[in-house]
Image (cartoon, rainbow, N blue to C red; front, side, top):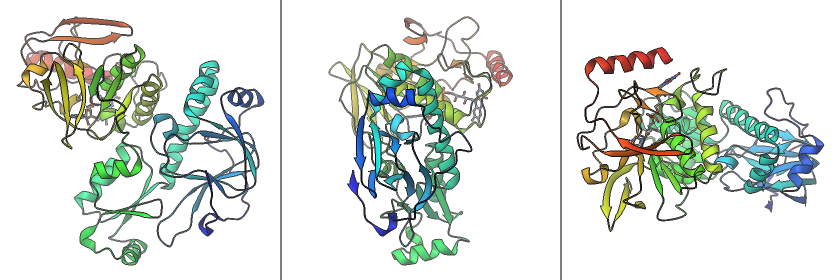
Length: 441
Ligand SMILES: Cc1cc2nc3c(=O)[nH]c(=O)nc-3n(C[C@H](O)[C@H](O)[C@H](O)COP(=O)(O)OP(=O)(O)OC[C@H]3O[C@@H](n4cnc5c(N)ncnc54)[C@H](O)[C@@H]3O)c2cc1C
């Protein structure tokens, strides 16, 4: 934490933001008492920065006295924009604190304050003692993320609507649920003025502006992810399980594997949630009778997998899977070896409809676990294990052997092995799968 006397962050004594959506609930005394057993009280002077956009692994702050304001630092020439002001009993934080990503906003003490800082492990401990508190915090953070997206807090993307790279960057931000504001060069005079002030010619657009200071010219998705702190550095070189694909299938596998104590890493070329994350409402997901948006489903699954210790590397496109020294080696698009698992272990390939693992060599594929079910009546379609989201089956990869051993986590703690059917569905059974899938919606 640092004292920030920048004129950008000096603002009038603003009133507390009303809680009209449930995003800013007030904790009761019992909840504060419980959290105080897992956190640290701090007295901070007016103007102190509690956390700053781009910070990782920061704690949630409960306001015990005074006021804290949450701001977005704008681009060159812009002023910090106030997102919300929180008073006594409110907590300041963001979903990123639970998913392990960097935060997108900055929090500053608006007055002299007394706060309770609770780090991730403390939150985890507290919510195991009070499940309602866990639900309250998670729900508030999910709602805040939606509010921030609506406000365009977070990134600024300046680019033309006709540019493929502008679309790519917007898609990457949206799929990763990163709040951003798009300024279309075709009709936004302010955007043009910003580029002129930065001396950036049109052929170097789209441009990403982050935290008022950092400007990237037409960055790749990986560069953007690194800037935002989406990609965590690998904490180890070998994992028990590597899950390729973070759609519902991969996320379910990660939750089960990590909860069984396997060290687990999840890779996805684009974002968590897969296809499901683009759905505004999923009605047929087990356990959500009122329906749930795909984005919320994905965020909840990431929080759950991380709770059990699963690590995520996104974007992380698997480009090869080979054997070396008795280990499986997963290569990433950037050419780096990510991790090694003993060849007796399993990898889960959960790449959904985009399954085209030409990157898997046939010997390594022999023990790769495609997320398919051989239960009677289900052999003709892929299943996201335990997710209940039935998918149309992907094309059979040519490089896979006709019969290969596999294991999966279809029933919680039960790990079982079987043999994939040597024959794949006929046209008529595929038709049945399609109909089942359609009927399930
Ligand atoms: C708009 C929409 C609405 C839907 N609504 C419903 C619904 O209401 N109910 C329902 O049952 N189903 C619905 N579906 C279908 C459902 O979303 C899918 O069946 C489900 O997402 C499949 O999950 P999956 O994990 O198997 O694969 P996917 O969701 O396809 O995920 C695969 C992931 O693997 C990643 N990947 C691929 N190759 C690589 C690689 N080489 N390296 C790293 N990562 C890789 C991809 O980026 C992707 O994120 C909907 C789909 C869409 C698009």
